[in-house]
Structures are given as structure tokens and as C-alpha cells.
Image 1 (tube, rainbow, N blue to C red):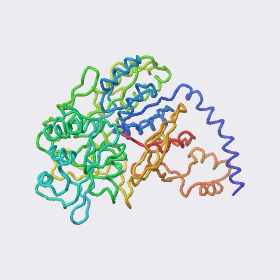
Image 2 (cartoon, rainbow, N blue to C red; image 1 turned 90 degrees about the vertical axis):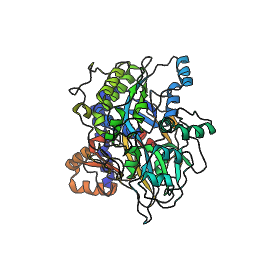
Image 3 (spheres, helix red, strand yellow; image 1 turned 45 degrees about the vertical axis):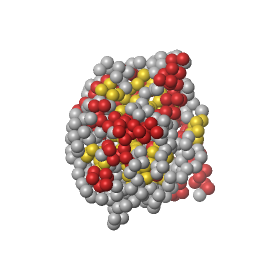
Amino acid sequence: MRRIAVALTALSIGLAPLAIAGTSAQAASNTPVEGAGSTWSQIAVDQWRADVKTRQNLKVNFTGTGSSAGRSLYYQGKIDFAVSEIPFLADEVAILRAGQKSFQYLPIVAGGTALMYNVKDVAGRQVTNLQLSPNTIAGIFTGSITNWSDPKITADNGGKALPSKSLVPVVRSDGSGTSAQFTAFLAAKVPSIWGPFASANGRSTNTGTSDYPIFSNAVAQSGSDGVANYVANRSTGVGSIGYVETGYALQRGFPVAAVKNASGKYTLPTPANVSTALKAATLNADKTQVLTGVYNNGDATAYPISSYSYMITPTSGFNPEKGLTLSKFMLYFACDGQQKASVLGYAPLSPNLVQVVFDAIRNIPGHVTIPAKATKANCNNPTFSGSLGSGANSAGNSSGGGTTGNTTGGTGSGGTTTGGTTDGTTTGGTTTDGTTTGGTTDGTTTGGTTTSGDGTTQALTPVKVTLESKGASIAVPALILLAALIGIPLLMLASRAASPRLAGPAGRVKGVLFKADELDTDGDAENQESAGSHRKS
């Protein structure tokens, strides 16, 4: 066995110069860029980062700090781009102007803020067809509804009462765009309930807030993963309900509530229903969204808590080499990347919003050359063909109950498999620097940091991450060459020593299946250091 190890080491040394020689020119033209912000969007952002790393050798680093922290890091000049569900606040704009820092907004993805829940019926079976009206939702998340047998919940579900069980609302403990979008909906639709609660807690009564008030029976968790992990816990999470982007429920195989819309129908946050709702959205001159029409969309299939997330980028005073990387990434997620939006729990950008991204790309110093107009011929976004892509009618494992329209539930489609949880643990995954790793957590946390591409280290809200081995660390092309040089029997023996199973044509994040070309498997030291990074908003 020692001779085998020596032979493999010597061979790897001999192969290294070949790999470097083949990529050095390409790497020199792809300067890494650093981003931070929302994890409402991060499931999609991480997938796209993995894609461009594999396909274009682009290194796009992203840390899920939450929308508020992402905006702060941007105006402090510590990152190249931010992702946020809400634009800069007035005091933040003043800081940007004082520092002469440019910025622009562009949509990055659309989605629904979902109400992920963990409730059992009298027989101990998971409830999957919960329906909630805006009034009931407001009562739950302001503390006036504290038991699942409350008459308001019973009325929303056609008179069918749930067991008497304490209800635990799970809210965000950190500054969050998800909180801002959720509370903006409550402020618009149920001001008589949200207003007094907001006022009593020092929040605006007529707008949303990024900092959700903590109230008596609520539990606060940091980050979207924190909320989703708490709800999905098979032990302590029973009886809880929290607000997250739909993709977090999809990852864990947990149901989400159907929400009563303006037509009186209960709908799920499927990509199809989100896209329908967002047809009523309008854009301000700066490309930020106006969602009043979405909340009041009278279409029977519209999901009312639907919105966009923004990328924030510079327009001047930016390194052109970074501008080339960033603009290539923007072009990818606006077109090819949107093919995966529905599978991941989002809704793809419509053609008019793709054009907004194209226009924004041209404002980036050093940007990639692109056509003036986005079309089906130059942009592989499914909406140019009148489609939303695979998974357009999926939302967690919800059955939909009495919902109407495109509300069929599912645990994923289009080549993505979303798993449930077992033994009190929740499943999920994080992607850092294009490397995707599976993980499990029981809601407890440990310390951790992540190192970005420029060598700086940022502290992250810690999370316990356990890697799930699904194959050998030796890349398939290297295996072929090894077979030719040292023989199949020796290779098989060496591979068994490295792992109980060689990597096949696909890699798996526990809960999500990706094609082989969609994952970065370079295993470099930086990625190994960053593998414990975690979504935080």
C-alpha cells in the first residue's frame, strides 16, 4: 500500500504542470469578484457560481450575510457587489454619496416568501395542506394566535381543526431582506393588525422592517438556514412555522402554506404562481420594485407574497478586470442560469427584466460585449420561449389542500431531487467558490469563518456542517490516465483506499442532485477552508 501511495504522489506531481499550463492564460483573464448579502437568493446564486466556475473558470465568491449586512459591506467598499431584497435606505445612500461610490440595482431572481411549517395531525402524520389567510398570518406573527387549534386557523382550513398544540413562530434575529419583504406584505394587507404591533415595538406602521421584533412566543434564528433548520427539526421544530424563500423548504422536503390571495383563493408559492403574481409589479426609475399590485393581484393563481431580489453593482470607479468577471456572471444568470430557477424554488426573470440586466451590464467598466437587445436567439432564458422551465408547479411537498390553479406540490422535478429529513436532522447544502457540499444540522452551531478570493477573512454566523462523502476525490479524467499508466487493478485498489465509492456521473448534495458539469470539484485549499460557509439571510 505504501508503494501505491508513492506511485500516486509521483504521478500527481507529474500531472500538475499539465493542468497549470492548460488554464493559466484563462485564469489570468478571470479576476475573482467578491459579493455578500441575501440568502433569500443564495440558493440560486450559489448554483450559478458553481456553473460559471466549471464552465467559464470564473470565480465569484459570495457570503450569505443577510441583506442588511450585504448593503453595509458594499458601501464600506469591502465587496464588489451585494444582493438585497430591498434598496439602500436613506442614511445608506448618504454614505454612498459621501464616499462617491456608484451603484445600480438590477433584478437577479424572482420568488415567493413561503411559510414553512412543521405540524402533525392527531395520528402523528405530517400536515401538508395547510391554508392561511393574511389576517391569520398576521395573528401568528404578532403573537395573538398561539395554538394550532385556534378558530381562525380552523376557518381557513374549511372547518377542519388541527390538534391543540402550541404554535411557535420562527422569525429572523438578524437584519434581513426576507423580513422586510414579509412585513411589507403584512403592512399593506393587514395594517389593522401589523400597525399596532409595529408601533408597540418601535417599527414603522406602514412599511416593512428588516429587523423583526421579537415577541413572547416567538423564536429568533439567524439566517434563512437558521429559520428553516429550526422548523425542519423533527423534534424541537414540531409546532413551528417560519418565513423563508421557497427553495429552503424544497431542500428539506417540508411543506409550505397556501396563502389566500385577493381573489379569495389559496395558492402555493410555485414558480408559476409567483410569475403570475409578479405580472402586476411595476418598476421605479431606478429599477426597484413596486409590489402593491402583486399583493392585490386578482388572478386566482397569483401567490401574493411574491417579489424580486436585486443585485447591486458599481457603474464607475471599478476595476475593469473585475468588471469583466462580474459582467460575465450577470450575463450567465440572466440567460442560461434562469433555466434552473424553477427547479431551485424560484421563478425565472421575464424578458423585460432580462433586458434590465443587459442594460446594467453595459454600465459595468470592462464589461463583456453583449447585444443591445436581449432575445431568444442570444439569451437562453426559458421565458423567451413562453416557458418557466422544469419544476414550475412545485412548492415543497405541499399537497395544496383546497387551493386552485397551478398549485400542485412536489419534491422537485427536472432532474433535481429534494429529500426530507431523518432522525431529527435537516438536510441542505452550501456552495462556496463553486464547490458544493452537502450538510446536516440539528440547529446547533459552532464557530467558523470563510476566506474570500482576495485572501481576506470575514466572520460568519457559525453553523455546524457535516460533509457527506459521495465519491473519491480523484477527478474522472485523472482516473482514466491512471488506468493507462498503472493498470486497472492497481487503480481500483487505490480508489478503495481513498473512498468506499468512486465518483459517478453525478454528484449529490444531500437533498439536491446536480449534473457532473454543474459542480466545482477542484478541491483547492481555499475552497476547503470555505466549505463551512453558511447562508445567513
